[in-house]
Image 1 (tube, helix red, strand yellow):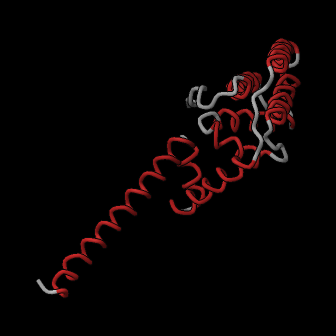
Image 2 (cartoon, one colour):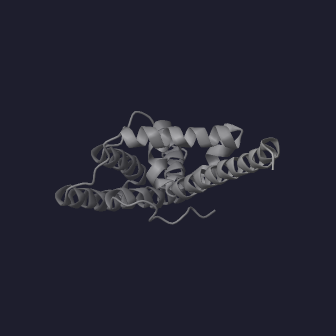
Length: 186
């Protein structure tokens, strides 16, 4: 066989192998993002307007998260937070609006002590999404009711639901785990 014939055979084979490698790599990265972010993957992709833009956003979140110093809590701190949560739940009986505000404050404090920045709700959501993507719908729902409560527009049932939602994130953050909470059910 001549050199030209060999090149005519080898070059297309190399191109096909390279294309297959690129497709496999993209598929694996997409699968990694889907598994890591859970329902937040689809939400981010839809919000970004395209799959590529959404996945770029999620990779940026991963890089920011990797730069944070997220740490487990010492046992004494976990016990203190657990006691404080019990107090917030007991407060709900007599002062449900105050209890929801205190639950929000307690979750934010716990995030801070774990090493998450707490500079604003949207950034909190992005930072939490990397390890706690399956719990974010709970946090969104709780925060929405907390906002209604601030304007004195939340019903007692909404406030009760907010406590349940805050508890899902609180438990996950307190246990240092990711993905333990159940998805939000409509």
